[in-house]
Figure (cartoon, one colour):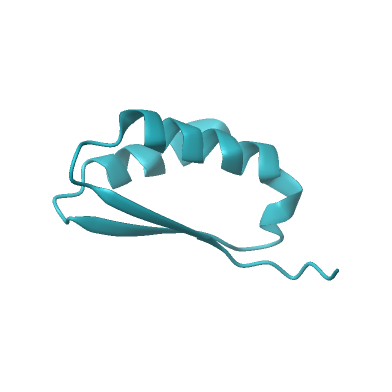
Length: 64
């Protein structure tokens, strides 16, 4: 997913009127775009309004 699309999704999260939102990174193999995930989380956290709780999760096929 290109950054402009992910940023638009993050902006929608930030507009939420719910006290808590879940952000799930999934589809394909999100670990291949971990730098982009870090960027999105940082973007949300820097702009997150007081009172909005954000829980992040990641669905991966990675093996260890």
